[in-house]
Image (cartoon, rainbow, N blue to C red; front, side, top):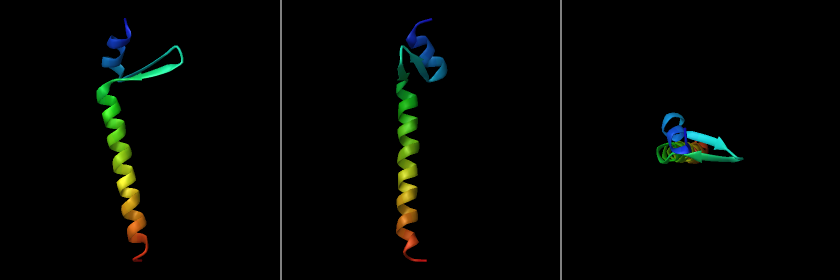
Length: 50
């Protein structure tokens, strides 16, 4: 089983001290982090109103 096969099953592989992500997994992680930052910004903006 090579790295490409593992990526398709797990989404990420850690070998030789390096973690490899599939493109789909990387996009999901970045999307979640973006949504978290947007939510944090909304909370900080509305905090001044209350």
